[in-house]
Image (tube, rainbow, N blue to C red; front, side, top):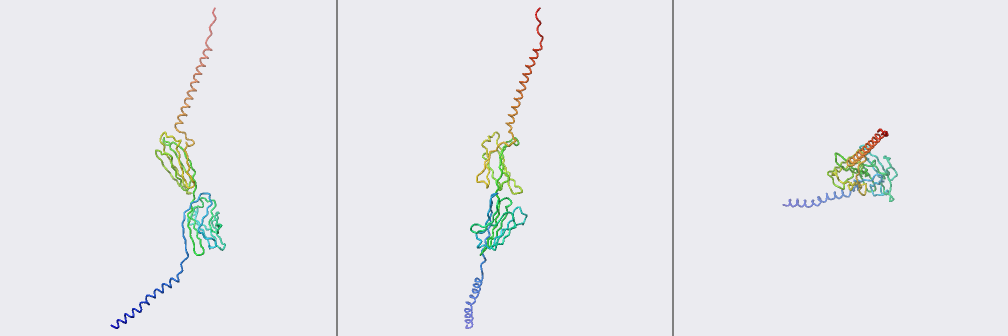
Length: 286
């Protein structure tokens, strides 16, 4: 019985020491661990009007805090996996392997940005920026697209003995949206994409026979414009409506018939005059 009591006493005395040992190691480990610098990763999708000046930013830090900035650019016109770089560091070193007018600039508050002058389809692509500053770094991936207004037109034509109104928006980016002021017998929309990424949209509206097209119009919407464009379809150049053709033919026939009638009447009159001139004169009485 006494032996058992000594064993219990020994266990009780050892328990506090056993529990305190792991706790001391965990605390030491926390004191020795340092947190990594903050890292920001951002993905953006932006679109800019053709011909505009574009400024891309990837950090709000000033050059007093920035160590270096590297822009890695993959343009759509480039081959697969081909890129160019524009970089600058706070010790004055710079790099530009793009050589196409893009440049790093600073705002009045000494914040860095990438300037793209006269934005065109050749500037479309993915722009990756790495900005390292005191206490952290930021990575931006910016997918840059272009907005190009389409060339628009509208006309009337006749196909398979049916009158068709056509409204067309050519070589725009992105694709335009077309709607009609009136409903027809049927309508169709065809969208084509060319090798340079430009869209052509053509909407065809089959009109009921005898419909008055004076108030017919199509509306074209595109992100480049603040307001929609409205067009009134006119007969296509070189196209003459069938009714006009019939009227022209009738006028020509009537004109020719009139000419023939007067020509024949004149001919008869001339013959009578000739006959009266050639008849024998009466002899005088004896």
